[in-house]
Image 1 (cartoon, protein in one colour):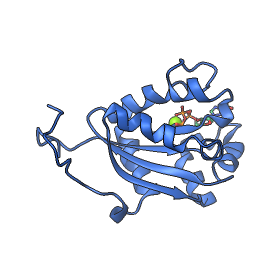
Image 2 (cartoon, helix red, strand yellow):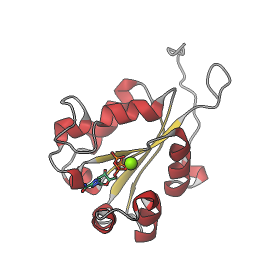
Image 3 (cartoon, protein in one colour):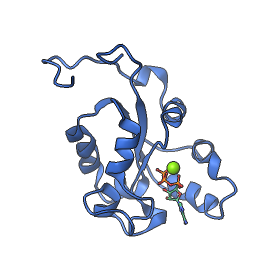
Length: 155
Ligand code: RTP
Ligand code: MG
């Protein structure tokens, strides 16, 4: 619960296999930490094909779906669960446009990528999908609710 008693918004963020292979894990996690979102789940993970298919189920009819699934399972990913007010939209801003060539400098994709099929990182596109995706990628006991033991600096 937030300081107002509202249910906190959550997003599923993932460093895709290219981001892991190129050594950008720390850099990417750092960008969300320094923005101020709370880390509530984190793991290195080898994705089963069925999970990648389920995660991108809405894109099943797209011509790139097969390649997208193969890409996601091509190496380990880093699964990241974030919580905070407005985290879904804000994480997408920090990530940048889907095609890294269109992503603004200063965003993760704008700074680190050039290819839409190797765009480094994923972020949920709605609060509903945030919860749906966290349910797919994390077991319940892998999501940790913790208090920041300091004077709250938000609100
Ligand atoms: P994501 O779900 O991975 O965060 O990416 P997104 O919301 O920015 O984009 P989405 O439409 O959900 O597409 C999922 C992933 O599919 C690949 N893609 N390839 N034209 C293409 O070849 C194409 N379009 C999309 C990208 O890797 C994109 O992140
Ligand atoms: Mg998407």
